[in-house]
Amino acid sequence: MSDYSYQLLAIIIYMIVMLGIGWYAFRKTSNLTDYMLGGRGLGAAVTALSAGAADMSGWLLMGLPGAIYLSGLVEAWIAIGLTVGAYLNWLLVAPRLRVYTQVTKDSITIPSYLDNRLRDNTKLLRIASGIIILVFFTFYVSSGMVSGGKFFESSFGMDYHTGLLFVSAVVVAYTLFGGFLAVSYTDVIQGLIMLVTLIAVPVFGIFLTGGIGETVDSIKAVDPEMFSLLPSTVTATAIISSLAWGLGYFGQPHIIVRFMAISSVKETKSARRIGIGWMIFSLLGALATALVGVAYFQQQGTELKDAETVFIVLGQILFHPFIAGIVLAAILAAVMSTISSQLIVTSSALIEDIYKALFNKTATDKHYVFLGRIAVLFVSIFAAIVAWNPESTILGLVAFAWAGFGAAFGPIILLSLFWRKLTNYGALAGMVAGAAVAFVWGRTESLTSMLYEIVPGFIACLVVAVVVSMLTYKPNAEIEEEFNETQRILKEEQK
Image (cartoon, rainbow, N blue to C red; front, side, top):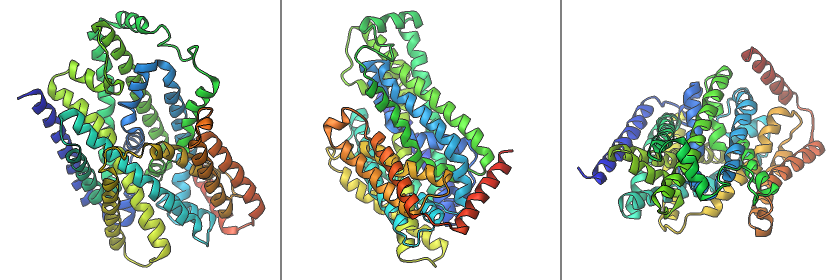
């Protein structure tokens, strides 16, 4: 067999495993809570690995190593910010959100939780939240499909559209039939593949470059400041902007929905340790891969044409073609895990938060599960149409999505969990203000060059939500009772 055949075989086996998991999850899905939230029965390891795989996407295996390869460890500030943000998200949000979403009428989506938590009789908050999720995640899914198409085009010389359809068909199949369980179980496999390959590539790479000492010397020969977190060219605002990426975690629907699905509050502690451990080792692997790549190409006297392919190229140099195919599968896993997570959250927003809120509240779970699957298909088709032109990567919207979700939802989630006086009007006004500031700031080059838009957007949302809530607050016995009940349950389960 040729190298190409071995690599393609590894990819095909990986795809078959994903479809098999989707079929298994389909057989375990019987109602809407199962389809949208896995029946709230996920274990710690599944929750942690699923959240990590859904979070990182191709950035972990291509974007971050490429940035480190070009600029050195100064680019690691984003990784540090993300790690701190993820840890605080697990510590502060996970246990409270798990309890509060069940106390508030067993809410199964973020918009339905906010609606129930704040007693929004107007339904404006729920519908607005659902629309924000629907719009941004549709384009987010589209960008993932573009990544899949370009992956097959660059790795196997396959036609872009064929690769796009292949990736889309597999992801849509296991997400459509298996729902949240399929997404979570496949994320576990994908997360493990990502972790193992990110550790294996730099470890074996160091042997290729002559050991740690030789590797360090070769890197310093390229740039003496490559190992510095604070090179002479870095500014304080640049570091703040990089660290601020961590703020985004509090408002990412496809990540925090995992906290709602975990089986109990007690499991969140174990999940936090597993999730942060996975994240630290994966990020360190990505950093080490880039640095080993710098040393290898310095020793060879050659240059890497595209810095973001350093992980792929090293994998093909170091390993047997079949193992190199698994390295390629890791990149595909990162892309697919994020697409599937965004698809299920988008489906939930469309059915649970827009359709049910506006039209129909009395249908059976079977009916809603069927509509959820139709929603996955509908969103996927629209996203594929947008992605059909490889130039339509919607990179601006994807970059905005992290800041937009973080600024629009982050402060509202935190306030809803920790401040009993948040009102529906305060939440709605803060959400709009945060998204608007992040959008305008992010589209103004003179402002983005100074500071990442999530910082002013987050602050605007927080201030507006607090001020409007103070002006519109009226005591509500049911809200007070639920807030106190959540605190009581948390204390009991955390003993």
